[in-house]
Length: 104
Image (tube, rainbow, N blue to C red; front, side, top):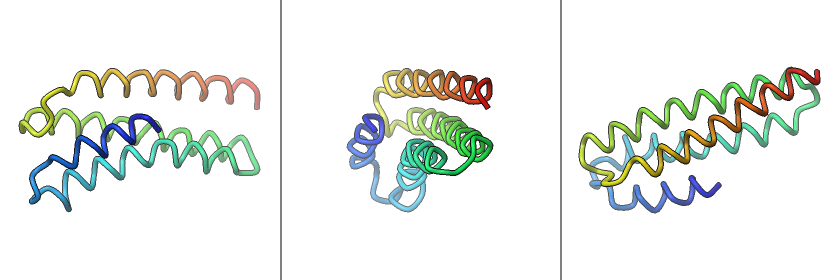
């Protein structure tokens, strides 16, 4: 949730012509991570939970690419902090996936 807040703040400063492209994609990707975790946790089976965790993991990879592009285009001055937070989230998701799979 912290990363969602951070990236919403950062993307406010993106060029206006990016509002319907990169800005929107970043916001959708970052919101997708906790949303899919929550939706999967509310499902009736561990199999569905695992599926939603994989979707959340896919969103982290999508977001990583978008952050790198934003940095290369000069829209984000500091990408390493966001990428480090995202890496932590990926590790936590992989740990959760491993735990859920073991305890099916």
